[in-house]
Image 1 (cartoon, rainbow, N blue to C red):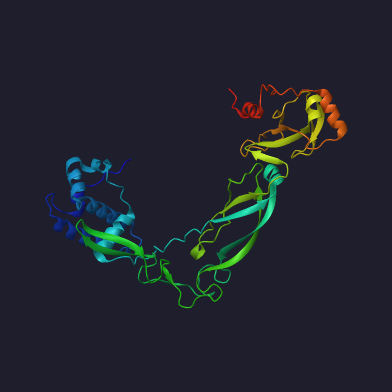
Image 2 (spheres, rainbow, N blue to C red):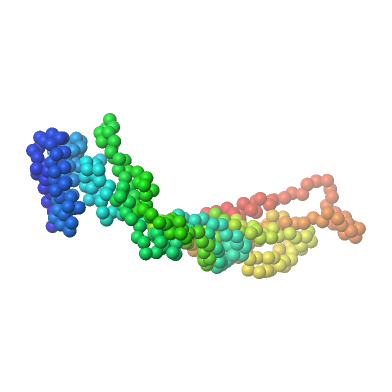
Length: 372
């Protein structure tokens, strides 16, 4: 069953035409009366304190008050009227009474910083994946003080200036009214605690430098533009806060014969004029070892021969690309007298260019063109 909200004027005990000063006096009186620090364990007082703070946060703002007077509580659904929280009531109370020393609101331990490392791997490891051991230099929780910054057996004291929150509020007057700024406490530097005699090992930081050796899995198909996240292996957070993450990028050693293009591998297949003219069975290297391809008679330079499934696995699907062998006909720069005589017997030197129907780039364009 929905809770029916009381009228805000009734909550503060003022008339509907109450002036801003009357609203302020009523709020100060009720906030002091129902403040949780004065009513430890009293849930009813806590609810009244929140109710009083909510009422004053609306009625003290001219625009919000006008919407409330016109539409009642439904005006809260309109723009520029954010949800009210228990901390908002404390913020209002602190604005008037110089708070910031509440018990039980110690600063929350912060998460540690993320780290980034580059790992050198082989070409084959980038294709098939691998497990590698890496040494990570990082800040970790001090084992002597367990991150507290104080020697064993000594508990850090709560900062009296910020009450353990790590923040101080400073109220300032501006042309728009009173403005409250939250800044890191200058006494405890935002930690919320003070250590008079710091831990000798970490000098009060709660963190020590270390080098941790971890085993990481390199996914099959990883490329140099891919980052792999290793959760919880970054730096430890202050005051025993959780670790950040480790992000690994990879520097891949080049292959002596293969070049990666996306999920495909490209190999330049050099053949002799005789092989191109007569055809041949040629052994070519792949990441899976050597394999034989058939070179058809009359193969032209730039022809593409595909070896299906011998490329790089897709990171998500695992489906492998292909190896593309691009034929390059090697013309000998020096020939023997007998070879020269044989070439002359073949003829063909008539002073005219040979008609070429398809060139090298035509074959490449056909292979890499998207399927329709």
